[in-house]
Length: 505
Image 1 (cartoon, helix red, strand yellow):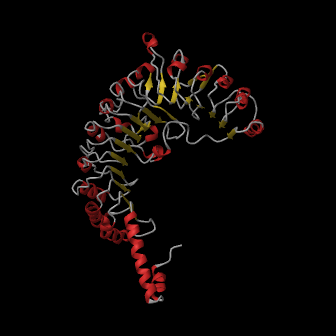
Image 2: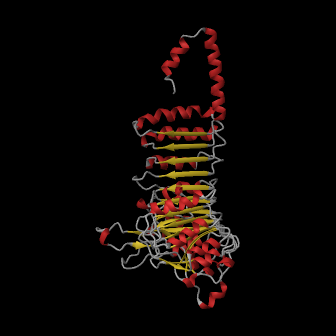
Image 3: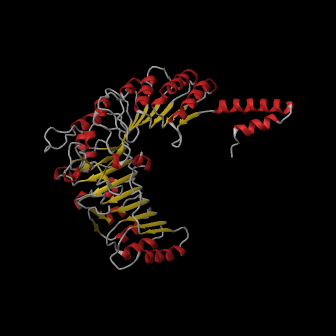
């Protein structure tokens, strides 16, 4: 527990002169050591304190910057407009005395304070500044981001929250990593398409993460309410980023016009899917393609956003390592053109028809070790071909799922065929209706399977999940190193290729 300053002062007052001299010397040495080791500085206003409390703290920090030359990261959080002058003083002082300052995070600041600080960043010559994260207050005014475009040293930028439509040319050309996001699925949207107008300048961009953008962020609202949104600007702007290695994120599948008085009765504007033929032809360096669409405001109903035949990925097949994709059948003329994905390790896939499967799954995906397959809220349902999946030569982890209240998952072959996959060690069954009980138990005795998870499933025979858990655990006791998880609740988060950080911002 920390002692109050008053008590420390009282202790010092009751020591003799020699001890006080030693204490002062020790304190100086300690302060010097702390100052020399200070690498990160965070200033925030506790929610229980009045706004004015942060002002003197900012002044003190600005006055001490000359002692903190090794600071590399600065975070300002939950500060109001009353902090503009001391915050600017701190930033200018850090620019003079902290040559290693490379990362700045501005979280939930007043709009005017954010604008003042971002404008100051472009003029105070922070030569080492390479990373900036900016998060708007959840219910505050949209941010004006135009000053960011002048930060020529930035290589990584994160913006969470809505931006003003007046923002122009706000993405620096030097960026290599860009993350744009709303506060969450139920607060979707980042304020429109100004980011598409600006992203064309980012020729060196390698990583693009998009979190809970809504349809209005991908296309302008049409004048005629009966027309659909036109996503051609999104396809053209993102499709020209030829150095892009990672394209990932989740979109809100539906948004409503703010002019509609009754959203319950409106159809809204939707993102049903993204077309690979329009988005991907020039993105030949992609290693990770993991875009999802969230349905009806539910975390457990994410489906792969990019939909098409596997031949539409021919330009990326040699480089892809992670992929989320909704597979359509090949046209007859392209049936022999299904590419091989030699480096693909993680695959989240929906096969809407049995004809969507390539002729030989093992030849198409020879290196896949983590496979997630199932309905994922697809209105057309999905097909699970157990024999094809069991043939994969490197698959170690398999998740089979149906989104609750989503489309159906039809089975081809026997689930027990998975027991023949010699590399498979982890099987997860999620929300399967009328799963074949006997074949599920076959998985429990397959010697190579070390982990079996069953979440929110029903079976073709009357059996409670408690009884299933008891039966499978009886098997587990006879097998060293075998683990089983049986739950009535839906799994959260649903299996996918996105991190919790990206889903929640």
